[in-house]
Length: 73
Image 1 (cartoon, rainbow, N blue to C red):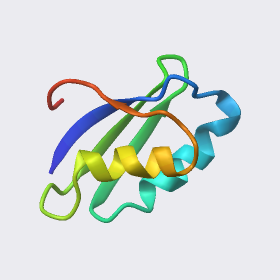
Image 2: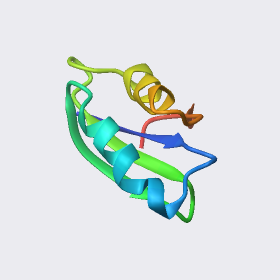
Image 3: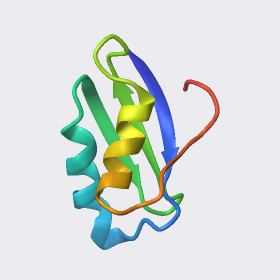
């Protein structure tokens, strides 16, 4: 299992559950933590089942910009 961060620049408090749900729907996800103040999502996942690109695409599919932050946590 690995953990990465995604930056979601337009993230607002009212979007938190929508983004969390989209990330939880990605295959291989283990845990998602949304931080509205820093506009980031911290995602732990099974790297054999999903990838950071999958999570980034899930956020973009619901209409938000998502940028991978460098390196594994």
